[in-house]
Each structure stands twice: as C-alpha cells, then as structure tokens.
Length: 511
Image 1: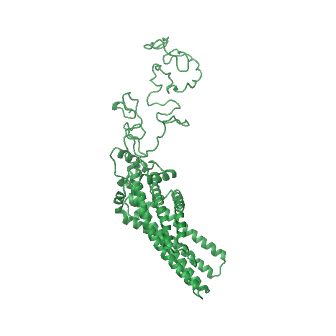
Image 2: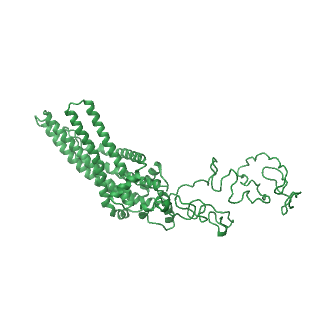
Image 3: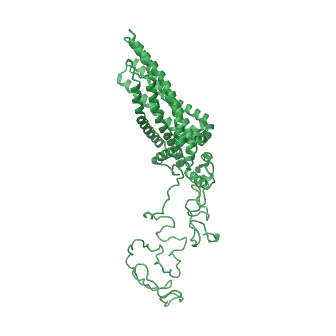
C-alpha cells in the first residue's frame, strides 16, 4: 500500500488475490486509497429477493464473506455511531414495519390469572373466570357459605313480610265495610307498600354486607392468584380474620351512604310531590317531579357505589382502616370513573342474567309446589319459597366470586394505571420465581407503588431493568439482563459471552 497520491494495487496488501464478487452480482471494484480521486462506477441494479431462507446484506453494506476496505470497521459503521437515516441498535426507525417474530415488545409477564400490565375488559373477565377455575374450593366454598347465610336471612324476612301482607289483605277483603271504605283501603295499601319496601331494603342491605365480607375474603385469595399461587379456605380465613371488623364497618357505612342517600332524595321528592298534590297542581307536573326525584336518587346512589367499590380490596390488601379505605377508593376511582362504572354495571347485568336463568327452574318448581293464595294472589308457602331460595343459593355461589374477582382486578388495574404498580408486580413475580421477594400480603401496601418511590422513579427492579421513569444507570444497564427488561445496550461481545449479559471486562464499556 502506498502513501499519498499515486497508483495503488488492485488488491490491498494481505488480502487474497481472488476475491468473490460482491452481493448483487457485480464484479470486483478497484480499490482506492482514502482521498483518491476518480469517479466511482455506476451502481448496479437493486438486489432482488433471493429464495426462501436467504438473508439480505448486513446493515453495513458489505457483501457476505468479504472483509471491509481499509479504514472502515467491520459492519460499515463504528460502534456508537448511527448511519444517516438509520435507527440505533435495538430501536426501530420511524415509519418502519415491524421486524420478524422475536423482535419488538415482548408479551407481558403472566405468572397467574392476569398479565402484569394494565388490564382490558377481556383481561378482567378472563382473569375472574380463571380465578374461579384455579381456586374452586376457596372461591366456590366461601361463596356457598355466604350465599346460604344470606338466603336464609332473606327467606325469613320475606316470609314474615309476605305473611303479614297476606293476612292484612285477606282481612280487608273478607271484612264487610272495610273493603268499601276508600280511607281504609288507602291505609292498608300504604302500610303494605311500606312493609314490602322495608323488607326489600333490609334484604339489599344484608346482601351488601355479605358481599362486602365475601369480597374481602376472596380478595386475599386473589392477591396470591395474581402470582399463580393457591391457598385453601383455612388460609384465606387466616389472612382475612384480622380484617373482619373493618370489613363489617365498611359494609355498614357503605350501605348507609348509598341507600341513605337514595332514601333521603326519594323522601324529599315525595314531600314535594305531596305539597304539589295538596296545592292541586297539574298531574303531569307531579309525575315529572316523581320521575326526576327517582332518577336523581338512582344517580347519586350509583355514583357513591362506584366511588366506594374499591374500598373492600383496600381494607384487605393494604390493611387500611374504614375511613382511610374510603378515601383511598375515592382516589383510585378518580380520573377513570366512567370506565369503572361501566365495568361494574356490565358485571351486574351479566351476573343478574346468569342468576335469573339459573334460578328460573327453581322458581317454577316453587310455584308448582306452593300455589298462590286464591284471595290475595300472594305465595306464602314455605316449600315454594325454600325452592326459590335454593335456586338463589346455587346462582349466588357462581356469581358472587365472579363479581368479587372483577372488583379486585379493577383495584389492581387502577393501581397499575395510576401508580405504575405493574412494574412492582413484575419484579415481585420474578423474585418469587427465584424463591426471593416480598410476601404478597405485604407487597400491596401503597409504599411499594412505583410512583411513590424517591424522585418519582419506580421500585428497584431486577438486573437490567431500572425503575419506572429512572434515568440511565450506566454500563450496568443491559439489554435483556438476567432478570428481565430491556434498555441500555452493551458493546459487541465475544462469541463466548452469553447473549444479554454484560461484558466480562469493565474496560470494554463505552465511556
């Protein structure tokens, strides 16, 4: 090789004289020293797609099997520099099509019933069904116990109210003089309606208390199921028994807030309605006022129920008190109210339809066994009501755990979306797979949320996976390190080093 200007040999010193043609079928081009003049030969036709299995030329533009010319490092571009218009290693150029299988964002880690990332509606429903299938004893067993208790209480209330109503109506029908007195009829009907309303309200309150307790116990099971772990009914009770009193307090307070607001607005509307009727107001205005008050009561009750819906999981998983759990639930629902409300409403519709379909055969059988009273038209037979209650128990055993799982998964989803809690769960799942990490009962505390870490960065992650929002960590941050995660990047490694591990010589790291 000669210095300066002048002729240079066709083949550089040290190279084989018989070089293969470059990729694309072009003959060997004369080699020129850096800075040498001359017009380069015209480019050949673009390379055609070879047969299946043939790879395109490497990014550096060099033909396969041909060393680079002097002064140019192997691969066509020095390490750490980016070719014009190209994208750095591990990233995709703007507008480029996705790479082949194996590139791009990997699927989310899924050690248990849900993927550890923000959840879609399908993820929540699939996770709820998988939760029941993976833990049938804990979910269906606890639900059956609670359903039996609730149905027995509801059956007693129903028998007392309907029996009293049937006796009152029968007496009014058979007593001469009472059935023809409008005031007597109005008083009897008003008392009957009030009794039925009180019975329905008492049943709803008891069911709400029972479902809150059941949701709390099932939430402790779900806290383990997220990591693919299973616990028995005894273990679930051991984890939940210390939270029974807070759950009871939460259930009572939630019922008072939801149904109390409904009753208060409804009573105010009835008072205004009575005043309007006494003032001989138009009938259409009275009807409009009644509908407006009823809708207003429903809207307020639905708003409060949605805001309070995540308090049960907070009491169990975060070990919070009643007041703190209510405030925490309001905070978690904030900013995503309509999505939470929509999922809860859809779940109520689905479970209601399933329960109705499962209970219809028992209801028909109950009517056949115990027909209604011929005078009042009210069914008071214990056998018929018991059969209807049995259908309710079977339906509730299936629908209660599904509803509880949806609520708990909504809680997990809101934390993943609002607090980057998916990063904490991913790290915990990886650590627990190696026999390390925090107990699931302690992991759900708010102090473990990635958004609560110092400087706003996520919780410490495994090797090669820094916390959420953390700045680059230097050479220790690697691509596909032994834990999980992607990032940083390492300089080229020798063939003997494992893919995704850092170089063995710290001096090889770029500065």
